[in-house]
Amino acid sequence: MLEILVGVGIGVVLGTISGIIPGVHANTLAGVLLGLQAVLLSVLGPLALAGAMFAALITHTFVDAIPSTFLGVPDADTSLVVLPAHALCVEGKGEEAVRIAALGGACAMILAVPLSVLCFLLLPALQPYFDWWIGILLIAAVGYMIVTCEAPGWALAVFVTSGLVGCFALHYSFLGWHAIGGESAILMPLLSGLFGISILMTSSRGKVPEQHFSGITLEDRKVVKCSVLGTAAGIAVGWLPGLSTASANGVLASLIGYEKDRRGYILATNAANTANAFIGLAALFALSRMRNGVMAALAELPPQSMSAMMVVGVLAAVLAYLITIALSRYARLLNGLDSSLLNRGVIGFIVLLCILLTGPFGLFILILATATGLVPHYINLPAVYCMGSIMIPVIFYSFGIVF
Image (cartoon, rainbow, N blue to C red):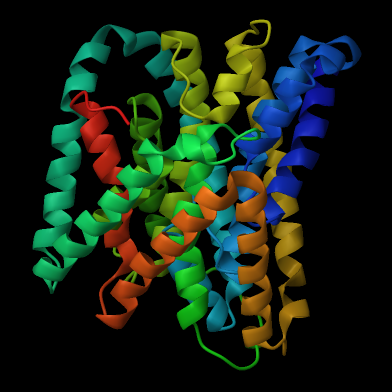
């Protein structure tokens, strides 16, 4: 139990740091910890080290709502959530957006832990059927999103263009620096350009609106509905190969309009984010498949019991929820800040971090993705169709075309 508590403590601290700093993911921290495993295993023990990695991942899924809301900076898990969350921040309701995101993660934890155990016990035998249907299901979801759009021609064009950018970035990801975070680090400039810098460049100018919190305006029925939908989406993409939470966000956008029901969408997507982390652990133990960088790092450590790791995840989720709520109360410190200066500072930080993590090729992808991400703004099209950058490579992967 002592090793579990030590791992949770270290992981929560690391996950809070990675969650607050734009562009840094728990996968990056897991890579650093894995590189130091020779020392850390002798000091902490295998369970504490593994627990620290998993606790950092769970904590990150909660705390990353803060930069997504107040700075408009996404990572691979919060790309679409930036849009409604940042919009609420502009209305002075940023703290509410963060609290809704934390609530979604907490609800997902309650639902995802028992569901992950059920998936671990029941689904491995059905895995060949799931693998075959992934591409078809995604094509159906994308087709529905495009057909129901007010401008289906533009939607298809943006979806395909962003998909080509995503395929190019992933195919040539070896050209970037990836000493920390693996080749998946190229997702940082890709998604930051599509959903981060492009938003900051076109966002309103002037002072940051006064932030105030008067409660969460979501009905209990809506909380239950969006929590279930988000958890189900997170479980699905976490178990099926080649998918990610970003894919879940794109599918959820067709079920919960992020422009019409911003609060419900924020709750659902953050529930999917947290559920994805728990089901990824179950997939690692049941199928030996690694759904993200943290799981890949855990696979390199001495094996642990799934029950112990689930305990780590639950404890980390509880602490992360409390930390996120506490940090959201400091939203009022942003009152009156020059938003133009803040946006330029965030853009500069993203560019610098992109160069440090992915090098010149990553900077090229950032520029290319930013140009693509600006298109929906100028033609008045929802940015959700830029999710082709993730969904098209996943569709190709499901049909055996690997980048």
